[in-house]
Length: 455
Ligand code: CO
Image (cartoon, rainbow, N blue to C red; front, side, top):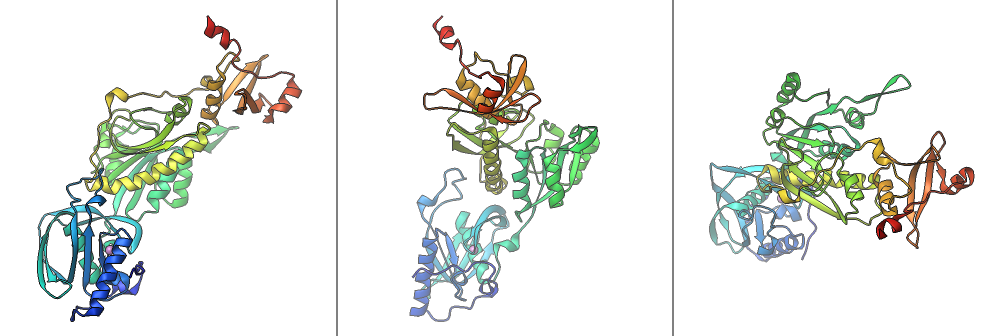
């Protein structure tokens, strides 16, 4: 019978389990229930306390189809169903290794745990016959984890926090900050951000969203102009980071800084690298009319977005996404991909892949002038520009010496581009219909296109 899994916190998980004395029908039923419950939950190991039975019994099994391609397959060798009563680890290798562990009593949690690589374990099988197993790879790991359960030790007791420094400045970085901050595995030691105070009507206003969030979460902020200054390099060194992360930063990270964190610096880049390296990947995805957008985690080097790829997430586009919508979506999925990737990166279970040189493309910085459109422009391009450039730099047309921002537009059933909202210079945002009646002029695109094409 499948049973409920006991979820942490629960007293039974923190009680030493009782030794099995008799191998009767009651025990057989408990073992059958354990196996059924483990399989039903796609687990690879289970200890009796996890189904509420204070007995020294562990079960584990890894079928071959549960192997994962992307991870280091040599660790994920399958093992048959193994049940051990009164298990005792009698030997452990001096060599230890870090692996990512999960536990059915901690749904959704994954932690990096360092344990001996190989073990010898002895105990009794389900009928009371003596057994001894020499285990390596994942089996050694599972048997140690499950035996721990019987001694009321949980994986969380091995928590070793990873110290992270971050380099970020824009909206896109906010989700990553929140995600790292709320994950017990990590300590966000400091965020380096560039100074970007803006004067509005003579007063200095702080428009850095990262700074505001860091203040709220009480994370140390270090404002910089330039990462190559010796005192900044010293500050990074003093934090003794295990890992760095760059998100929406805007400055290249010099090699002296890349070399400081023990495990290097990762970057969350909102494109399917090697496509769209550089500053404006999201805008370029929309302007390119791409069917897919994505986010990529790379290990940075001194080049521009040229580091090896650790993981990538691809999303299908509908062709209606604006910069804001796509950016929010990718910032959330990038933050979650980052947390899914880091543990496997740190344990060496992910092998970084080189970017394919033949597929490399670059994006450029945008300026206000990029937002100008003309009546002769292809309506399809104008529509993409409106989605890609809102809110910045924005799309505008100059008509009768009047500069008119075009904020939204759509294609009607006849595939004509219909403007929805505009903002003439010096006026408030308005509906296009009000604009037509007020200014006695229309905004149309694609004039002369037919003629040009037929020449
Ligand atoms: Co467990």
